[in-house]
Image 1 (cartoon, rainbow, N blue to C red):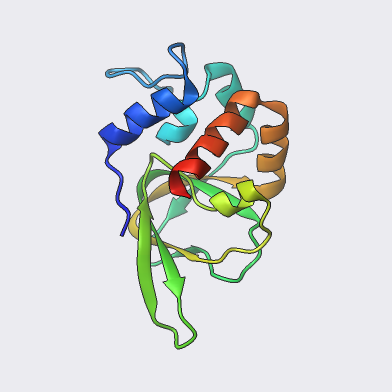
Image 2 (cartoon, helix red, strand yellow):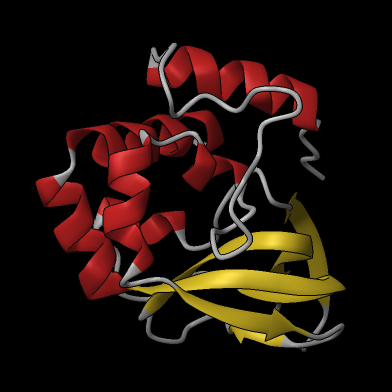
Length: 161
């Protein structure tokens, strides 16, 4: 099981983004209540995050909820704001095994970044909370128009590969 600590990810995000400006998360930083709490999104420059806000949909995440099932169309990516999402492999006999957990430092569906159209895993809410949902089409557009967002997504993909 892959579990990444928030402090390691904070350091990793800062290094991967090569930022020292407004996108870096600082201790005691005031975040407007209408902005996501996802640390990956908050690592973006403020202007880019503001642009993304129009395509992010806040959703509640209930314990046991399947955000995306294995072998289903990879139409959406989720950026948890709170709670924990498990990445699980689903075997033919229905058994599952947890492969990783995703909290507010990451996102689901990194396969979409690689161009995959189908999820190979199930994303299962283990601890209830909330997330920002983004369509695959919006993810693709944002990666094409915002170099800092694209670089961050590729950096996260590299960490998970």
